[in-house]
Image (tube, rainbow, N blue to C red; front, side, top):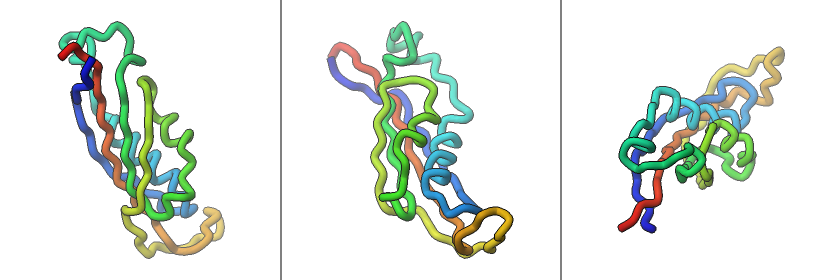
Length: 122
């Protein structure tokens, strides 16, 4: 069996308050998959269940060592999921608001690519 890419979706996510790279990363992944329908998974690839999809997520975010992998992958409803996190994205000066539990004035921006693959006979 050979893995074939069906779709790659890209998006960004922002945590304006809270300075949590996991929140920014999860929002980026959610945005990437928010407006997709994948009928090709059944109609072309012939899968019988969406958990047969292979879903590879790549996220670039400030402070990648603080990302909680399980929370980011929980955004994906189906598939055999994997996550690669790397340093990237942006830190932008915002406004610290104590009532929102801000630690500082940073806004964290993450970018994500979500690739859906299927295993097919070569």
